[in-house]
Image (cartoon, rainbow, N blue to C red):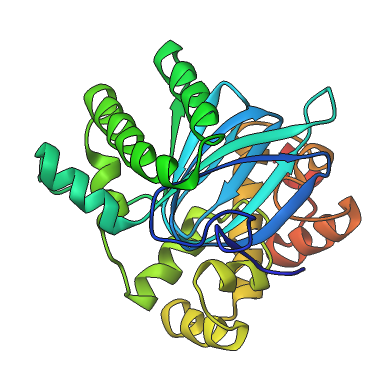
Length: 278
């Protein structure tokens, strides 16, 4: 699958200014590899959206919108009942965000949490805000550039007032520690059934580099490690939630029941059915 860079590949002005794009589609996509070259608000209007980052993931419908940090992510878009998908995208750089932070004296307190994506619930203010973005998108490029920076400041101030400033510091934080990135990516996506190729993409690494760095930390191959962790989760579901094998095999990453039963028996010496009765 082709890697898509945003906003570079959209038919909008190529500049460092704040940019808005009314994205609409009648095609579903599954785990599309996306490189966000700027931070992005995704104001979902129709359909549903799943995003996976190195240290966080969200699934939303059009009652929520997302703020995503520049970087690598996987994105799934599903159509609404009316067979449409629509999201109004607002792109902005860290340089622009820093100007707003300095101008408005946003609290400079540090946070240990550095998530790459945040979800917010729509309210009347946000709905009016999105409508105003669509109105601005119809104006000249010069006028857009002047107004959109003001609108970005507006939404940042509003969200910090109702949700705090953690998301601002997360956007501005810089984490280049490759080992830490692997740990975050792996452990935050343990049950998301991502492939090694997808995990390596989220870490901005080649597959061979990802495997090598993974084995340095976990002392075994990614395939073996993930299999053990997913079977341990299956054990928990059988014993603590009293589910049966047919209910959980797909949840723990197996495409069919027979391969799950075989793997479970290989690890624990008995079948899931026998274990569930013990």
